[in-house]
Length: 66
Image (cartoon, rainbow, N blue to C red; front, side, top):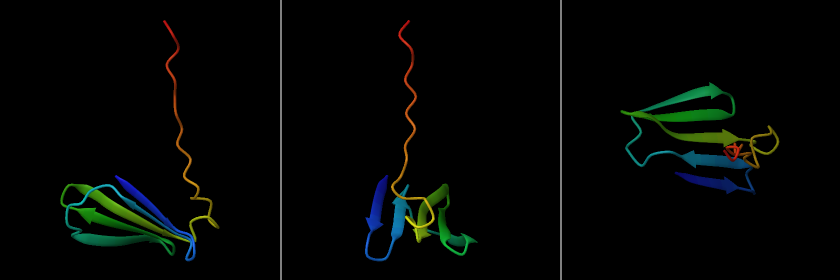
């Protein structure tokens, strides 16, 4: 997986797979998803910071000690 943020353009690009993109779909005016034959290959989010998608928040759940 690769995550790239282009600060000058406020674009967030997330690559899940390096397989060829076979279909693109616009989910909203600022979100585009590229599909491979196996599922989601990449996402591009315009106005990422302005829309609240960047910085990326990763939730970590810690198991309690037994």
